[in-house]
Length: 85
Length: 502
Picture 1: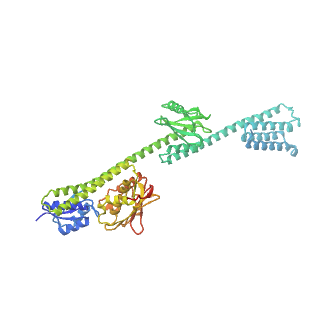
Picture 2: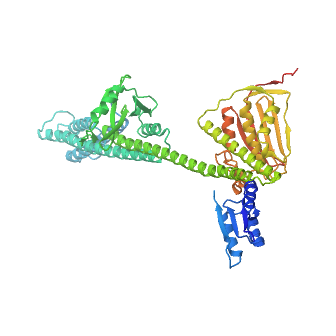
């Protein structure tokens, strides 16, 4: 089963380039453009890894991580890899 | 000269003496000694209330009256009894002594009042000085305060400058004093600090004749033992000690103004540093995002297995981000040129339609998927710099696209009229917050929408304003009725009907 990665960024061109790159490396990739969307995607798809932009329109990356850690299954924490400003 | 007070006292004493002379007619049994004592009281009163001259005059009259009416032989000025000479001298001596004592007391009072006035004025001056927070014009204000508080029509604060002297005139009439004299006054007081207790002043005062025929007092402005300048004044009615005290307050005031100036300069430096760090933070994000996207896109394109559609998408993403970088560099460049005043308007005859076309072409990508309603005449020409005008307009178009929901149209209306070229850009977004209007054109100011998202450097409107200023024009913002925000640029320039193309 491939590793699932969630890429979160409000820049469409970052998603448009980063997602194909990761897919070509054999990962399963989903995307989100807002913090709220990221939290929903985590609940829905339960990714193994999240690549998160710190500056999102609705909330910052730290807030997203906090929400994800709270709602995520207790047996496995989501790993946040941040692409900072 | 008799003043009013002396005249009143003299008249009253004459009346009193006349009344005493008439007493024996009413009371024939009265002793001459009683009358003599009463006359002495009158002389004493006059000596206390009036000047010495008046007192002596009154004492002589009193003596003559005593002699004529009371001393035997009555009715003549002859003095038969030598004892009566004693009475005569008693009158004179009482007059002189009482007058002297009174003079001394009056002098003390006058001095006390003048000291009090001086202290009050000095206090007022210190307060004026301490309440001054302006740095430009602070020294002129100081000179004016001195002139006003001490009623000096001619007073000036003179400070040595890099070349010559800076002279701040405070009174209605300028003090004219040669720089040579100022130099001399300054040199003679440097390192010298002696206090003259009698004059209540530190040494080093110089009095020089001015070209206007007055004598000008030059008082060193001292800070500790350092002389920082000279106070020049035509001192009428103000003594040396007072001037010295004024100079002391003035020296503190000058130091204070210089301190305020330094603080202001430090504040500017700090603001510049803030600006630089804001710019750096903003730029590092705005540069990194496109660079990351381009780098990843190129990485993707290296994979030969990628389908053609996906490759096209990568190329599109890379090109869009390159456009963005180009615009960003243009912004930085424009900003730097505005800061360096390196923008010179190059006026040409153009139609408003050409300006709008050039601007929309410039920000094509930002306007993608939008209807831009253009109303711009091509039958009139206006003499403006087409590059500056279209660059300024392009920023407004970009802004309108950023701050109104995608899908909403943008209206552009250009006119060439008596005032030159005027172009307004109206969007159908949420409009401007009233509190925003003051900050819109500040560098790095970003609207609410832009702050929530990551786009925009906050340089656009500041650049617009800078470009227009170079072209002699301006930009202003308002909320349009029934629409969103409206930004209008106006550039003065001559207009004419467009040449017919054959």
